[in-house]
Image 1 (cartoon, rainbow, N blue to C red):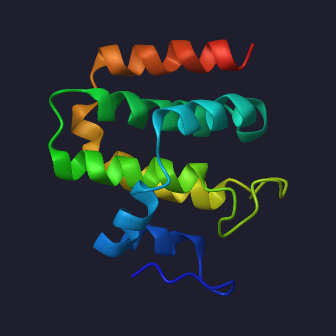
Image 2 (image 1 turned 90 degrees about the horizontal axis):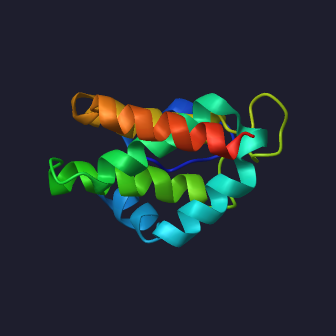
Image 3 (image 1 turned 60 degrees about the vertical axis):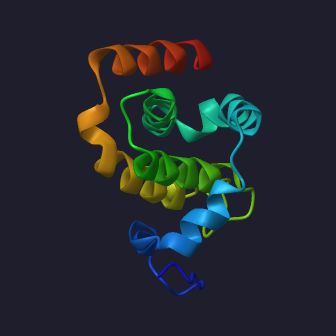
Length: 130
């Protein structure tokens, strides 16, 4: 499960269960994602932002099953939540738990990342980091 305490490792997020997915899905909305990604682009860095945007564009794709979209929605919902395992403002590791959640979802939909999706994510990342 994903019952997180301060002593548990960040990678526990990789085992998000159905209840966790449901909880974090409720945190997601397109507008909240857009606000968060714009606000934290420079502090989170290129890797986090591009992976999050890649998930966003995969989620919007018609070729992705609902179950996979639910995982993406949960991972992006976790990214949006202001209170998470490691504060996003802790230097060097602040986005570690967010990266774990994003990687967990990205791993399950990697085959759905088309060159077009990758290009969109790259272009939007570049815009945000100007």
